[in-house]
Length: 472
Image (cartoon, rainbow, N blue to C red):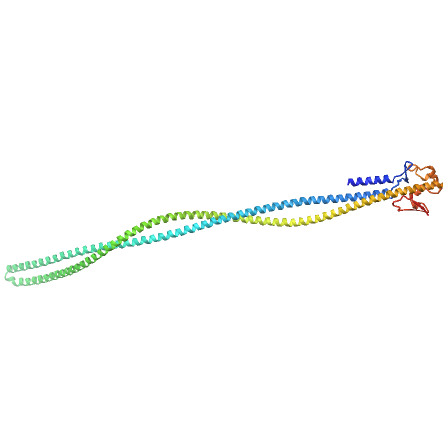
């Protein structure tokens, strides 16, 4: 702007220097105004001021556009930084999400492994339970066999006891039979003694008591016979019963002995079979006990593995829950970041639209500035050309004016001396006198063509000073 003002000042000073002409070392003036190349000083100053104002306005608009571009660059830089930060945050969130997914996959793998170990432990526990059931069944079979052997032994012992009891009963029956035979013999002896006693009494009592004695003897004999009969019947019945009982007991004893012998043989056979089976059962029991101990060890190991698997599963479920919660937080964060990215994208689109509008405006302003610069250059070129034309015209005009003045002076028509400005344009007295003698006033001639009747300018009144005349 200062360069433009300096250029305009230099042009104005150059125009002033070119428009100034001296006459005898003094500049030619018209009523206090300098002789210029067709433009008044006010018009020239207004044009210069208008050009300066246009250039200042263009410079201000260019500065405003530059400031807008700088603000736009700052906004674009900040927005790009926000977009980069959002992309970095999104990348970090995606990486964290991938890490979380990997951890969740590992936790799921550990959980599957724990479930498999727990299933294996459950199968081992079921196998151990089945083995324990088989062992319990085998133990029950052994117990049943042992109970059967004990029952057989007790049956043999009972048979022996019954045989011994039958033998004792047979011995008692024999003793009772012998006692009955002894009692029968004693009764017979008592009857004989009573009969002999009665006979002795009868013989001792005499004849008086023969009848009584006979009666008594008969009664006693009848009583003795009845008693003997009763005793005999009782003894016979007891003997018969004892004999029958003894026979039955002997038969039962024989049967019991045979049954006991058969049972003893069967028990011995069963005992031998049961002994072999017991040996095999004991061997199997030892094997089953070893298998049971191994199964218990495996069950303990499986239980420990199951407990570890359950602990790992609980940890895995806790980790999975934590990972799921973190995943939900990350998903919400990612959604928020996506929303921020969407808003940033919308802001970016809006900013791009604003940037495009500003760029279009800048392009329009640049085109306008270029057009103004071209117009200024064209104006400067036209001004330079006009200055050259004005300089040439001024030279020709001044030469013509001097020639006219010289011609007027030669005719002897001198203008009055008071019409000139003696301070700014003192002319030779002869020339003034000649102009006054011709009825021409140099001041009126210099003032313009309209001030001199019968004269008109030869050229444009904007570019001439009114001194180039043609007499009509």
